[in-house]
Image (cartoon, rainbow, N blue to C red; front, side, top):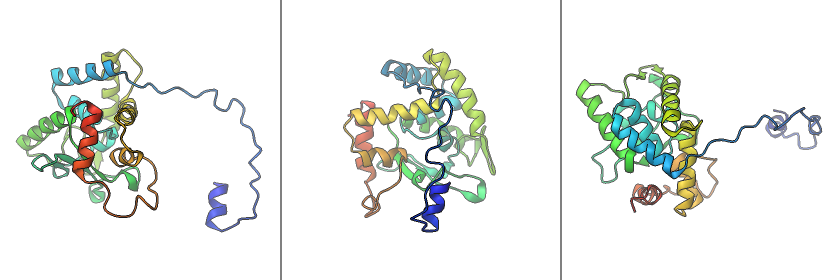
Length: 224
């Protein structure tokens, strides 16, 4: 907070009085985050398709997009484009309806490949059949998006399937690794996952085409 104040008020000569403060036990309570193995990821995909319900559609879409659980749960039907040359979701805000995102970088279009495409198709079919405007109406309605409720159910199920303490964040972090292993450039990774702060250079132009992002995602999930 002090450093933010220095920048905000241009107090360049101000010295931070807290810079030498040591916190007792700092870092000792940090937990190493679970990263799913490839075998665990395959088990999750197979279990999703075997169970084939709305919770498993969310999991499938999170797993092969790298999106946050809340980003998927809060999708509206109008945010899903399955008939386009590159099927994709548009992760965006609908502020009047209570749909928000974490930060500006979170607004993005992400191609649907692998189990994410399967999950999106199943969810769209169900929503259209019931006339729902939200893709996952059990957890989302106007000004009432219950992503935490969905997350609790998902985490319990993932831990039964994988026999680990992993959660939906572990799926997101796994996608970062999958993109790395596919040799995707860092700015491609950031654009797909909505990670980090865009640099000045990344802000120039329109960014990557969906076809390009689709190619990297297919390579990451083993379809290319």
